[in-house]
Image 1 (cartoon, rainbow, N blue to C red):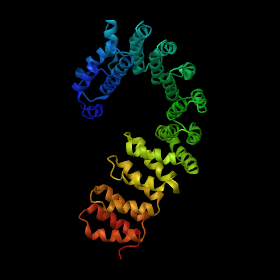
Image 2: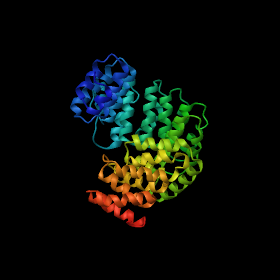
Image 3: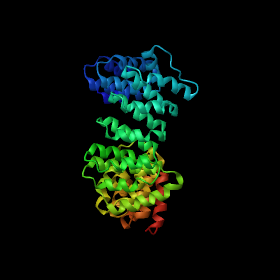
Image 4: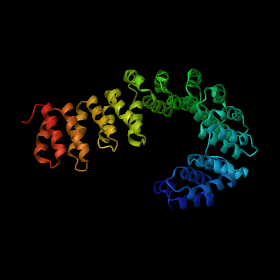
Length: 406
């Protein structure tokens, strides 16, 4: 049987909708709904099965996943229409569309309340704030979670006190959405609320706080995130590193340089293995260019002696990254880390027949900054041996920095 992972890669809508409709496994139906929310396919092939699942699946979890999938596809209003029998406007003034959905936010059916909360969050108009705040006390935790998420999308500071109260909710999902929304909204009260969670006895709560602190577009959470690098739980430490990367991405241009300097200073002083491990994971598995660029940049500036080889290996592996800035930052960072292990890794790339021309060119050029006599001899030889003109030019340039040809 084809796995869900394979179906996600191939985008086989027919098989995914069949699983959503017919599978006896709740987790399979839930995951099929999740994938259908993101798959690149015509809406006409996807929306009707999701609307049906959101209304009639036996599982609350699957119904919630189908509602979120419709939201992902900007089509949750279709479910609201199906449940109410009335057309829901998808065009026109945002405040008017929001007010129409406020009425269904207090409906008897929890799926309708969930769908309305998602739609209000998608619209993003503050006309929905008051009604969403009232739903933070809903008896159904699924509704509370989606109301909290919607308030984060709207980014209305008036919601902060109510979201702060939800940080103690019995549902982990509600606490996570409330914390994430506080991070999105920002401000001193939101930051204070999240900082209060860092000493919580629950590792889940600390991890939620760590993830949310990355949403702030300033250096204010920096010290708190650095303190989490000493947490006893690896998942919390990794969440802190991920949020540090997000801080670099979210900081306004005028603050970015100062934030980078402060972050490098603090992380260099700690030399936590979890920092390098997490940055390496982002390079290996990350999909967002801004995250991978910042991970490559940061690795070259915070890697200590103990973690040198792991960092250099990861950086060398992305010298031909399809994102040119990530590849360039990787080359610069290898030069910053330096040492014999940097020279070894670059020589391995240069001599690898499977390596791309871009990777070998960057390796040759960077050897001019970190190489010794071994590199000088190899570069000298490759000028005569290679048929790749770009590699030859980079090798010649690097060789001139190492004393020229023998």
